[in-house]
Image (cartoon, rainbow, N blue to C red; front, side, top):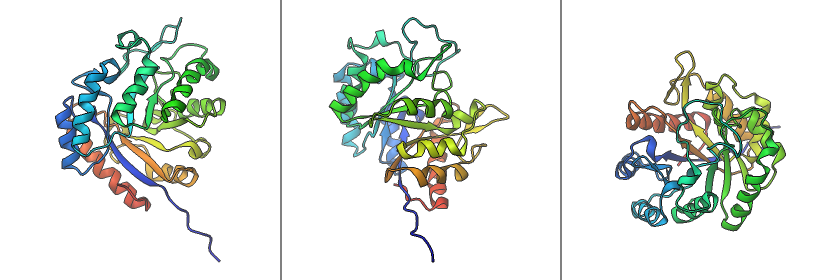
Length: 289
């Protein structure tokens, strides 16, 4: 006697626009050329959307939607800045943001306004730049404010593990998820980030996070060379790890974000990632669109 076959979630393929080009036109052109229907937004022409006026966001959103693309998430820099009264420990921070440069007096509110204009139902957030003696409970204040807005606007909060931030590893991400159980707070697993910092996730950690996971970040790492490469060209064993997440998630659709990080050849590397992720989904027997 055999059991009921496991129902696997569908992967929703998305690319982060500025991983292709600073130009919005080239982002859109790439999606059309490669049959990608979801474009996640972070910066345009080198400027973070969180630093733009809403009329600028409206123009960007109009051009994207006229191209029949959707924006599932705003890849924001919310809380990718020093905590009040703390000095960050790390060095260079990619896509860091000074909240004082937000045109609104309230960057949290501005981030949700941008989500609404883009049609995004997810907001990526961080955990302040790394400082000594951080505890997950330190985030109670900002996460409380963000959850209130998330409930009001119908937008989920995706906390990503980022090496320069306090939630750096998958272990850190699990610790935060244990403390904050609000339905709007979800883990955005960047498995390659964890491998890159020498702390690959355990199967138990992936099983623990899987039920709340509906968003994954995809890139690969050549660990010996300390560089990012397209999926399948590095050392991250996605084919072994993803089934653990897929078996445990309660979501029927999981957003698969391609975050290329190959500045020497961004468009071609992103194209390779698209093909690789489609091939990986086929290998695992998972639908992808």
